[in-house]
Length: 48
Image (cartoon, rainbow, N blue to C red; front, side):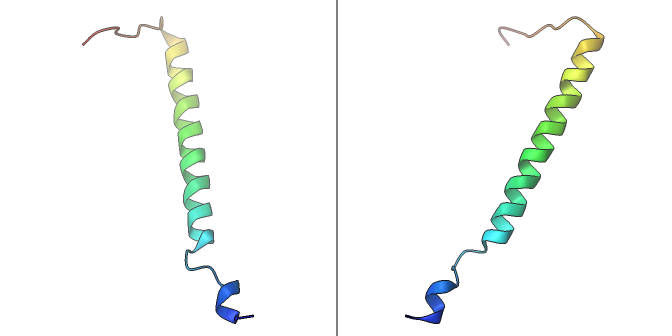
């Protein structure tokens, strides 16, 4: 049994932090966007 085997080559802590931050940022952005859309009628352009 090697000690190196227990230590992952990829920093999972960093990946977890980035993932949580990304999800949190996306959720907040989506919530703010939803809140802003509630002020006026929702109009999504079907074509450019």
